[in-house]
Image (tube, rainbow, N blue to C red):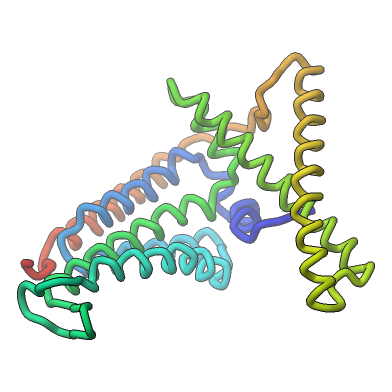
Length: 259
């Protein structure tokens, strides 16, 4: 059975049985602070608070958390590179020049600000992702007026993802048992067959799922109705207090340098 570390972390989290609304208050509030904070201290504080909540309170493994945060960090670095490195006539104080490429003090500050906001916001969102299983998230999303169709689409994508991963893992295991990767030439041939067979097998599985749902009088790939957990006022109050404290620090000095 195919598995994802992020999905395993959510199912094994100590916060799994907490109401999704409670965790949305905390994670959403931290994300709001990360997006609206005026200084680097606030962004760093959001990352620290999200890490402490996930690893110390919710029981997420530090290795899993680090891997989850590192994934968006790679894309953030690639995106920020286009902000920091400029071409053409430089404006402002030049820090580094290499051929047509230039790094100015203004572009460096702007890149650092974007990177800090993006990384801290990602940490806040990952706090929700690593503590709440996808079926619980989709069930909560479906209860919001007008968003039921989005929850259904996300549920289909979720099922298809695991269908593809499971098919790929089984076929690759069979190929390896038949020495399909004994040489570079055999490996290339096996990879090509793996891609084709995975799509065919996933398509067949999707047809069977559709037939089973139709036999039950439904065409929605829902996860049933997960048990609704009560909202604990104490947790909500604590979350609001943490968010307000982070906001007070994030909106205070020091601020990002003027560009």
